[in-house]
Length: 102
Image 1 (cartoon, one colour):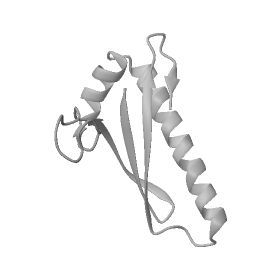
Image 2 (image 1 turned 60 degrees about the vertical axis):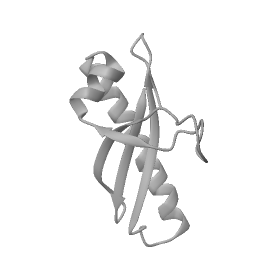
Image 3 (image 1 turned 135 degrees about the horizontal axis):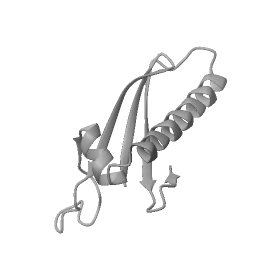
Image 4 (image 1 turned 120 degrees about the vertical axis):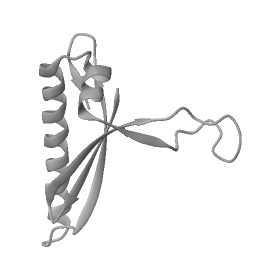
């Protein structure tokens, strides 16, 4: 499981990053909270999230893109002009049976 961050410019997805949250700190103001993350290469996300199952990963990417496009349509319905920039974060889980949950 992980997170996909879609960076959208003028109503279009321009960049997609695969990320993973770091373990929460045990002390300080953010104790127990997931506050830091790091980007992982697509190949690492494919291996870690889907056990190398390219078809399941492609399904996850398709589901994320569809969800992001739906959000962009919704945002466009609020205003005739596309948002100059928006980031849409989607949590992704690929189950052992290959089913994708976003």
